Image (tube, rainbow, N blue to C red; front, top):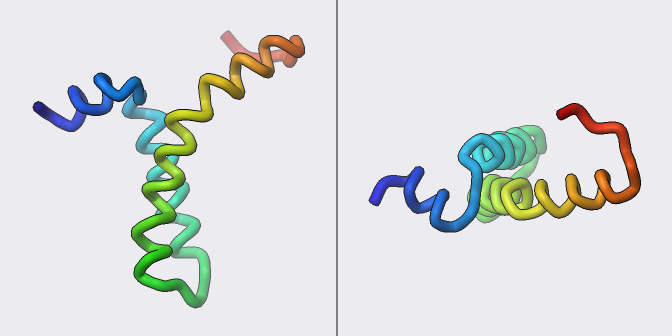
Length: 70
């Protein structure tokens, strides 16, 4: 089973996962003082948050008629 198969089985889009992972890495690198725990946890939390919160937020924005691109 590849990483893509695993992420698809978990319902996670790879593009969203990579975006969250990258954001977590940048957050970890942008601080002057950081611990090893922060460097590991930040990308993981960013990726999971992006993967699982993107669709509910888009659904909410559509429900309140927020202008979104197709």
